[in-house]
Image (cartoon, rainbow, N blue to C red; front, side, top):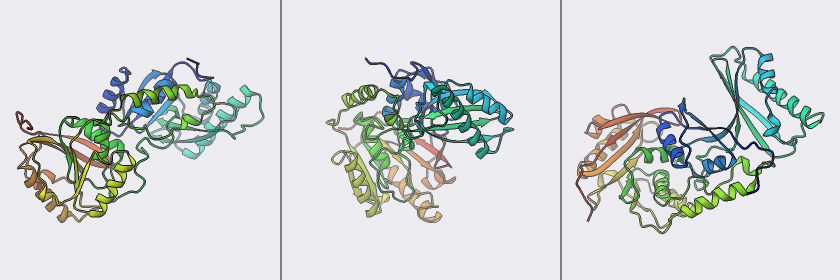
Length: 386
């Protein structure tokens, strides 16, 4: 196999995720063969190469982005920040014509002026690369290389974004409904539940169809990012053969012919029309049965199955009282489904009261920076479908 041009054979790789789903990310990494990745504040880091970068971007469902971790050092002054960045072997990652952008954040640090830190980091990168390539200034007429920094308690962490736009941008959701849930969070909810490819699945508040579509992709072994490009695809110093290897591996794993029982419904006809559109764009037109239906009429002929859903919160959809009535109707419908499990994400603190049943367990998660609870309701064991 032809080696990567310029890029090192091994380096730290950091994947980021929403708070509360680190367990899911760790499991995903382990399934890919990367099982030495400790979790810290929504980040998991392990050593790998550009094939690992490509595989993580293509395969993983629950992460926000994949980064090459360039360095970590202490800086309490701008001079220390400049010298710390300039001392790095940046030429191993950036070609002479790289178009470099710098963004980041400062938290609880002596360096707190973000714009000043951006300028200093960019200048340090430019000085290092200009010196190495023997040029007077950066050309910046090539592919984009997005540098991100985090300065937390005076510790500077410097990253190179390999994904580009967030990995929740799968490519199939071109129109957005009301109060959408990100594809990455939808996948995380499914992977936290007892969802399994051979069990019937339902989402009675499907909205634009994200949870059902992500579930179908999991059931059919369709990789999370199989239909999109990433920032590294445009890098001059990336060996395209590595992407082809990861892409081929993903396509070989697919089982689009598998029979699955997936149902998704919503009271809003416009939402169902949008969900059908997204399912078709995802190549799942005939895999999910969509229906306009009030949750109070939700029933199933199957004795067991899994519900994963994101009901209206009473903020952006419905008012609070309407949302509470919705929970009551959902609770009454669910009470008739003894063998079914239900996993519900909501920011409503009184959900259990109106649903009419105390959950078996709960987990704190965030949906678009809004603190939510993910409620677990397990169905009775022993119920088997005919």
